[in-house]
Image (cartoon, rainbow, N blue to C red; front, side, top):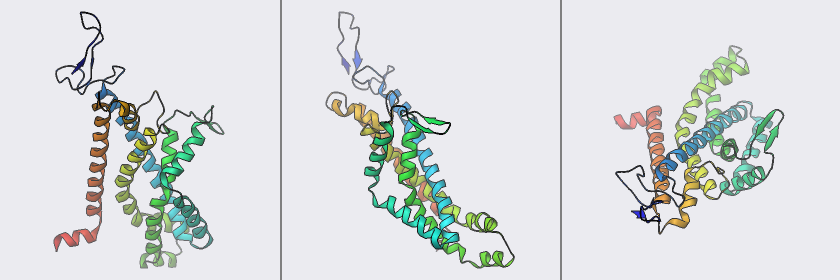
Length: 264
């Protein structure tokens, strides 16, 4: 499928659909850019943001959950109310509000000697990581509260173990599996969130591309060049499904109750 170029030689021909035997595997967009190449480069940005924000989110939530579940009392009340406050906002509304504030700063973000450009991938990564911290904090905090009452923790306390040893030597190894199980599911969620924010033009900023920005570019080309929007959409679906299957497999591998059900 070729859009007719000018002149007798056909110079300027742009493929609008798959050309299996040439370089344009699934065609080109209105500017003549290879859609497959853009999907691959956009996927790199989407996965970098998705994996990075999920790791940051799980790391922050794990530390806060350890502090809240171990010390309890005022620290637990303060952190839990803070998480409830973030939880009260709709995810996309909170992310859009933060992105609008951060992306409108002309000189970017400045924290001491650290400078972040508005077009940097760190901006959507930090925003997405922040809005999803409560979703990991709550189940991990529950696990910490449960493990803290176990006999081996009480035995370590009776032996005079310090708070650091109790938190990182006794409790952390027994709750880290919960975070490991949630990590693939969080990556799938953050990839979807990044694509949605980029589709709304408040995620990845031009000239960089992601699956969301490519879908936004192809929105006006659905009737003439449908593969511009269909290709990144298929990649998002396959990525999210694969990560969900991976998360289920990790859960079954690390959950002893699942093993007992399988043997039964």
